[in-house]
Length: 105
Image 1 (cartoon, rainbow, N blue to C red):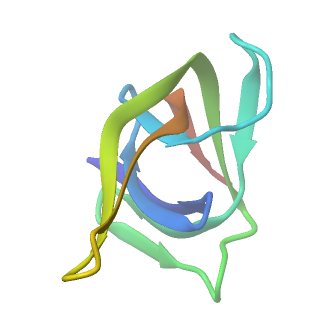
Image 2 (image 1 turned 180 degrees about the vertical axis):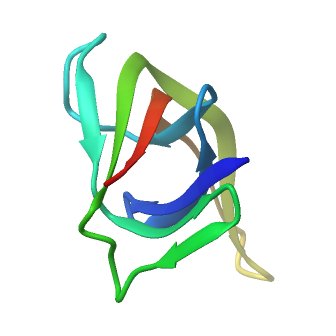
């Protein structure tokens, strides 16, 4: 099983080929190829490569499937005994990316 751990949009993801993942909004067009180059670790059938901090020889290609918005989260602030309440909703802007290939040179 070939997998990689990458860093994108301030978070780290365990990714595999053929699966799609939701990242924070990437400002590109739909259907466009992107290259993820912040690779921290690659496991290629038992051969493990670890970067310091990144692996320069590994390129991961993905395809932008869609731009969407995440689930609504409610932010509720209340000060007790002061009759102060504030309710606010938030939906994160996301980009769904299909991982096509993990290329180890």
